[in-house]
Image 1 (cartoon, rainbow, N blue to C red):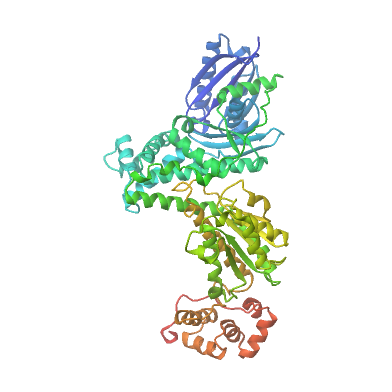
Image 2 (image 1 turned 120 degrees about the vertical axis):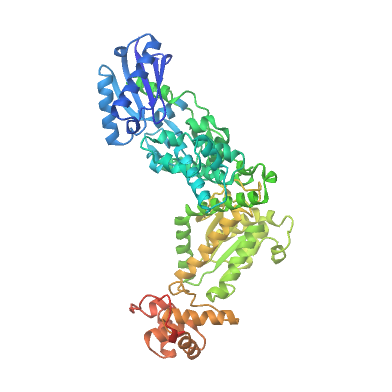
Length: 627
């Protein structure tokens, strides 16, 4: 009978499993820290040897009878660490075939039985690792405690920062302060500084405080809840990045949640589950078949010619519409104080801003494509229903006064028409034919861009309008908050800030609406900047319909030309109130007529009209004589 050995070791514990060639467990051992960065080389070797000998004794054999062994240890993915670990293994198991792999691979194989899928591990450290079954590997995280997110160490570190911020008065008091003070037996919170910087302090000591954060968050503490939300989102981002690199993000894939934090704390597991479903809707959660130590032993058997059992293709559909689901963090919303309610809403808004960040490249590509068409005479048209439609109308209505555009250059379509801007028109959003007719009514053409705005990504009115826009050859952009969705499949450009469960289940006027407003700000402003409607950050096409805007126009000329307010007023008057003409005239030292000619040749773009003119940087203040 041949025996193989598998080791799973890291920053908190070490597990060893011995299997026979029938894949039956013969023995098991355990030990403490085997990460040599924490325990030192000799300390790690001693831990590993003792745990392996314990497993061998449990199996009734000696280590010399081990035919093959796999060590799955933290840090093994880094070449320098792998060489050190391989040397330790050569010394302790000289008579065996030997393999050093990352602990994440062992966890994947142990949990699924094959190399196909993704595992997310959150314990003292955190990592997502996956393989696609075709030999491609990918990972995110696992770079050590200094760069950790979502791990026990990261939770504790963020919580300790919150405690000190509360001590400074930089944020509201937190229950974490008393919990940390009691757990560490400190006389006062200032004693935390001496504790954290003590020479003997290590990563494990700090990570051990993570349960305090989880307890406080589950009890409703705002600072702790913010930490949980932030770190759960980070773990979900690990999974999404790994899935994208493997090429499986758009189809069902197996996902394991493993590690001490995700195994022992149901609240954190649920928060991570919710975050993963938001960012990776095709993830299919599976219960682990076995632990990482067993996975390491299976890899040792694979070395001996016993192939891993391939897992079947994963069936099932993507997660349900994420924004309609209940939010783990706000389940008891009505039991919270008013301050806590607004605190939770503020936390959700921060998540919305973060969700937009991942869409910045898509937004930039859309802006460039829209601007290219508008330079040739195209229009920008928003179409939406409910909150989405109102936000589109708001953005379109702001363009004429801000950028001096005609009202039909940036315009909007709203399910139910203008009445629906202030009243709920029942059933209007469910009519795809109305969307088609509204787009047709604008005579949309090939140079136009139609932006479909729908949190769900499946509003019939918007789908109908986008279908008609595509039929007419227009550029189409989908701005949605859920995937998968019909609008995502049909649009030329997809912008999908995935915000997940709302504070109020299904109320997409909240986080989803916030992301829509942010993205629409970027689209219209970015397009107008590309079209030359600004000079630097100055709105040089502003329309002067009231005294406030007239004063703004003078300040714009003053700042652009580095002249006094009086001089700016005179320049504007000479230019007939036209801001661009006034600026070009002053900067080039020419008459208003000459300035208008330069602008015409430059297509109305001030930057082009003034060419490479060397203009000093804007001064923060003017002298008294200039004021």
